[in-house]
Each structure stands twice: as structure tokens, then as C-alpha cells.
Length: 137
Image 1 (cartoon, rainbow, N blue to C red):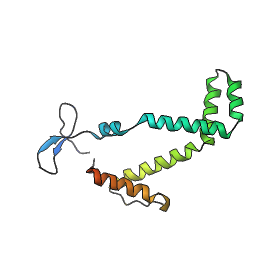
Image 2 (cartoon, helix red, strand yellow):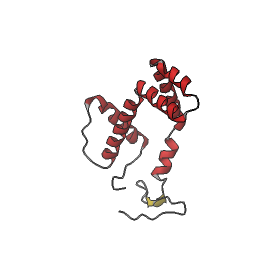
Image 3 (cartoon, rainbow, N blue to C red):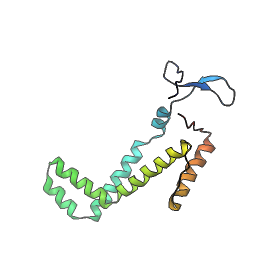
Image 4 (tube, rainbow, N blue to C red):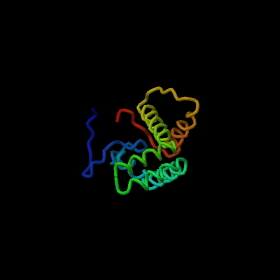
């Protein structure tokens, strides 16, 4: 593991590629937290929950019968999300994320044709925004 000097806020102190001067850089976890949008993700899940309930009318009946039974209600939520095929979308997102991690680590990756545009877009956005991936980190 590489030992990195850090400033008082825990940010890595490394050379600026443009100037060569040592400076503090924003940590990846900070950047990830900044760009994550939990609200949009939560609303997506809620929309899919509604779609799943609409697709399977018996879920409304089960919900009425469940009352305040949390386990039963959780089971209904799971069934509704499955009916809306959200787990499929989540699995795709997880797999695409893993492919980008492997790409960033310098690995040669094999991307199925249906998802090549997603990975190409990721690589393009990194290049356009000037984000440089350091594989050994």
C-alpha cells in the first residue's frame, strides 16, 4: 500500500500535474459524496414501488390485510419492487459500476455490446471533466 502525506483535513498531498507543486487534493470519498444524489435515487425507488403495486393488484389487498405488521409490509415492498423489475436495474448498475472500477484500475475489460455506450460515456465524461484516475490508489 502506498503511504501518502496528508494535510490537517486528511486530504492527500501530491504534485499538481500542471505545475508540479505539492498541493492538497479533494479525497475521492468527498467527491463521491458530493456527486451522489440520494434524493433522486430514493424518488426512483418510490416511483418503481408504485409501478410494482399497479402491476400486481393483490399487493394492495395484502397491504390492507397487513395492518402495521412491518415484516408483512416489507415483504410487500420487496414484491412490488420485484414486479417493477428494480432489482434488474440495480444489478445492471452494480455490474456497470464494477466495470468502471476495473477500468480505472487499469484492467482490460470485456463489455457486452448492449453496455458499451455506457462505459464509453463514463470514460468520455472523465476525460472532458479533467478527472484523472490514478490506478494504484
